[in-house]
Picture 1 (tube, helix red, strand yellow):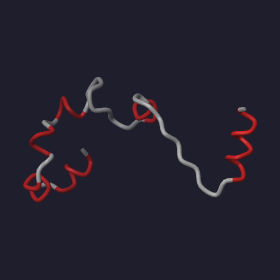
Picture 2: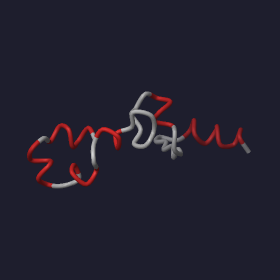
Picture 3: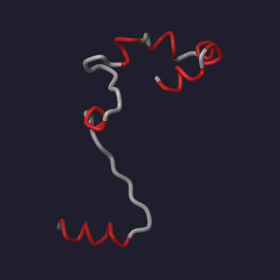
Picture 4: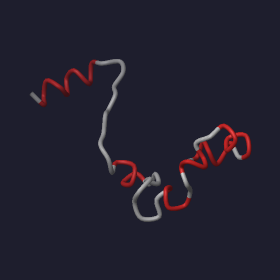
Length: 63
């Protein structure tokens, strides 16, 4: 079965990978709840607003 999937992937033009929790931490992307997570630095209810975006769009996008 794995060999069939590998052949299909090699022949495909596009590929999508759905991953689970934790993959971002392993790749160096900050997590939300982990050690030094984004939710410990910022309050989501304060950043998830149009006003927050207009005030600091870069911070909102990074969050």
